[in-house]
Structure formats: C-alpha cells, structure tokens
Length: 422
Image 1 (spheres, rainbow, N blue to C red):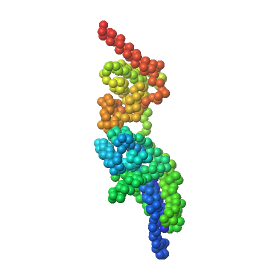
Image 2: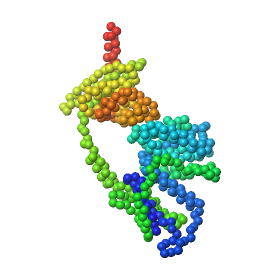
Image 3: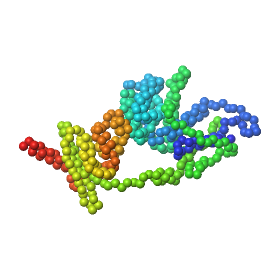
Image 4: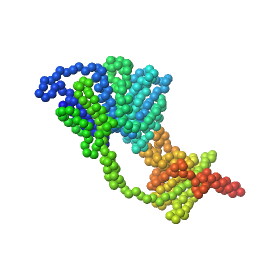
C-alpha cells in the first residue's frame, strides 16, 4: 500500500510525497518480521528528512530573502559551539529588540559551523528581505554584528526551489565535538530557527494499492519536473517519489489580469522639468532652480529663482525643490535634474516613505540628514510623481549646463554683494 501526502507550502506551490506504508505484510497475509536498520541508513534518512523540512521552511517564509554569513575575527574566536551559540543569542536579542520597535517579528534560520581551520566558527543565517516594510536587513545586521565581527550577504534566488541551499544548511554542523556534547546529555540541534515560522499544512492524505502512480497535477497546475525525486527505499525496497506542483503560467496571468481590473485607471499627469543647482561655502550657500513647462505647441513656460540659505548642499537642493513644486497647482509629473546623489536616490526609490515608517531614521538607525525638509516634502508635496532622468540624459537647460547656471548664480551673488558694499 502506498501513501500520498499533499502539503501546501504557498498559495502557488504544493508538495506531493508518495511512499510505501510502514506495515510489514499485505492484507490477508501474516505480518513479516521487522528488520534492523543500520546506522548508516538511519543517518542518511534523517539527513534527507532535515533537507526536506528546511526546504519547505525556506519556500514558505524566506522567498526573496537574504543569506547572511556572520564571521568572527581571528583573534576573537569562540572557544566552542556553546560559546558561539551564546554570542549568536545575544545578537539575536538585539535584532529582535530593534524590529519590535516597528512591530516586525524576527524570522530566521541559523546554522553554526566550524570552518576548515579548527577553532574558527561562523554562522549561516537566512532572514526575510523586509524591503516592503522599509527595513534594510543586511545593513541592520551589519550594524548589530560589528562588535562581534564581519558579515557578508547574498540574495536568495529560487533556483531548484532552494534545494541546494537546504542541502548545504542541513548538513551536520557538528563533528567530533558535537558527539562529545551529546554524550554529556546536552542536545545540540543541527540548525535552529525562530518559533514564528510558518509550517507546511497537510491538505490531503490518500492510501492506495498497486504500483506507484505517475506524477500528476490537477487542472490549472503543472508538475515541476526539476523538483522530481524518485528512488528505492533501501530499507523497505519500495519506490518513493517527491515533487512540487505549481500554478500554470496561464493561471498566474489570469490572476494578474483580475488584479489589474480592480486597479484604478492610470492618471495622465502634466509634465514639468525642474533644473536645480546649489553650492555651499563656509556654511552658507546659494541655490538656483528653473521650473519649465512645455506647452503643446512647443512653447516653454519657465519660472526661476535664486536664493541664499545656510546649510548643507542637500538642504539647499531640497529648499529649491520645495520652492519649485509649491508653484504647481495640481498633481504633476516632475522630472528633477540635480547632481545631488542623495536627493536623486531618495526620490527615485521613494525613501521618504520608508523613513517615515522608521520615525525618520535610516537603515542603520541613525537620524536622516535634512529630516525636517524631507518630512515637509512627504507631507505637502508627495502627491507629485517624481522622475529622475537617466545618467545618459544630459542635465542641461537649453544648452546651459547646471554648472554654468551655478556659475551665473555665483556671479549674480558677487555683483549683488559689491553693490551692497558701495
């Protein structure tokens, strides 16, 4: 008799596991004598089971997340696995405490490993991305781990349904030392994970007689051939197989189209260009902006201004931006020409939305520079759609570069000061 177990991992992925039942005899026949399992077969079975559990946890909780390695310096290595686990525990508490400020639970899977050099330990950790919640996890982890050592990170890519990653992390983290710890009656798990992870949900369990069936999927789903694993159980001598079924591309397209029907029609916004240049010297600076609107007949309508302020270059650029967009009477698509890299990146990636959720602190937990000006833009000028020109698009205004505009503004300021001295 065979058993077919279907477990839901995500809304688009279901795991199918088929194997021979553990009975020792067919209906109407005498029960067979049980066989002793060799330690090698038992160890291999346990390793495969760990890999399956770990792969399921990654699929359910960490798609699009991060694989982060935590390393110790050569002169400050933990003495043993227990000390390494203790240090990681302190670090985990700091991360949980920081995320709790924003009501974000900390989900993780961690494996502690001794490197090729004896006595050199490191941790492999899987965490969520959290970009959608305004959190830069690699930066946060780097900041909290810096007193213990260094970090490196890489993005999780769904190649083979994370099977290779699960095999790597599910390997035994301990060798001779772990065996000695177990002899002392202490339990050292192969991998540890947070208790708030989602677990697979068994949606059906079916028993059937005869030979094992071919992999099959219901209407609207398909069998992921790359995930198919088939073999012979060395203990029972019976076949087994494991595979994933997923939504068909047509099903995904259908869901996308349904979601788009519910979306509001795209707004066609009027377009304007704003050219900004600023310069700072001895704490005082000057900024210039030109706001340009092109009419249908190609005639430009412009508005420009030059102003003096105290502050940083970024602050002057933001003041010029605020002054320019304050002249707009309706929602507008604003293409911002500026050489300030922070302003360009913040508008392009919509960082003010993340900063507002983080109480105007960046991913490292430090206050955002010019937070007052960014907060004003978020509250009073965020209804506009900001567009950043590509690097190949010249930052010019009718043949005048922004540097030339700034030079003209400086010359204007110089002449004005001469007039005041006279």
